[in-house]
Length: 184
Image 1 (cartoon, helix red, strand yellow):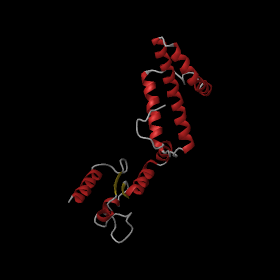
Image 2 (spheres, rainbow, N blue to C red):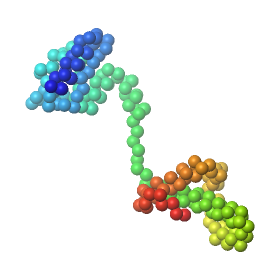
Image 3 (tube, rainbow, N blue to C red):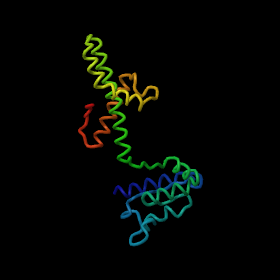
Image 4 (cartoon, rainbow, N blue to C red):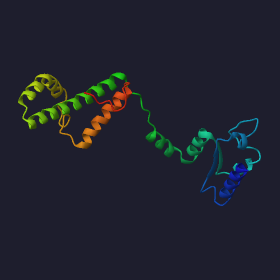
């Protein structure tokens, strides 16, 4: 019954306009009820074929049928739109993922190292600062040489710091760690 209603709605809509000025199309993926039985499924069923015998009234089956109807009506405009909107993303290579994970690890570690030093300074712990610099100093220098572009090593807003942590967490998850694993 629903199929009959769809055909009647299409028939009514197509009969109320000048199909030469406002072409219509009936596109379906239901080849059992709307397509030629025991034949080319891209052709309409004989019971409804007369609806599509008029110029400007088209029948289409599935995505290919929709594509054909759109190409027929819009021509090169739709092809240009397809070209503009088509994209294909290649998965990242493992080396690219591990390099990004290392970058975010370094940047988060560096920030935490500085924060640790600031806390020791506030506490007046000169011995703790000396110990920290002896341990973290070579790593900091390596990070500073590697990430020398302005802003790469902060200062960070809370939002930027949250983004760094989120990216590190996501990359580690892809590499097999649990979510929110942010140890540095």
